[in-house]
Image (tube, rainbow, N blue to C red; front, side, top):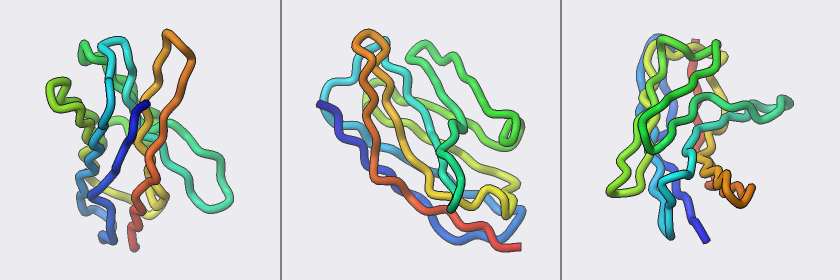
Length: 117
């Protein structure tokens, strides 16, 4: 079993920055993919960025060039550095671990990010 706890959300003005952190407890496998998703009110949850243990990263087009995902394999942490924030980035951000070998997904409770214009 994997437990995920996010932190670092808050209220920021447009153009500002925030850094989200996610601490994973339990056994994280080297094949697990760690990711950040977000969900705005009335919208579907969408993937923002993901990273493998080897450091391969993927970003959604909406955040490419502004957000950076990173991972500490030794400590089982994953981070999301968010720069040049826009009001449309306002959402609840969720940490995710995708265990590909068993098709399991683990989720945190989320952290709220609000960007004011």
